[in-house]
Length: 80
Image (cartoon, rainbow, N blue to C red):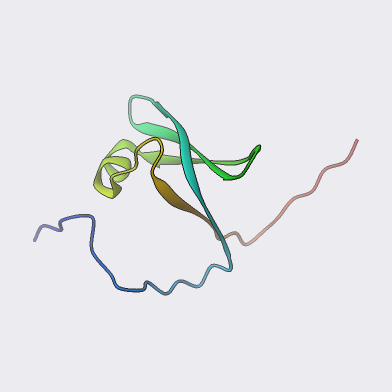
């Protein structure tokens, strides 16, 4: 069985509450993974690491809209 991506969904529902719409600012391709920078507000960026296959399947390109979705069981804080 083979799946084809991207899968078109009218309104995907997800359990993550932290969804940040933005624009792809830069992409740094590695051997297996791509580092994707999404600007969610002027000067405010979120960086995601995805497989190159996922990046290509989702059609992620610089200047295109994307959503940074954060789903974590733990959040760490640090102070000086």
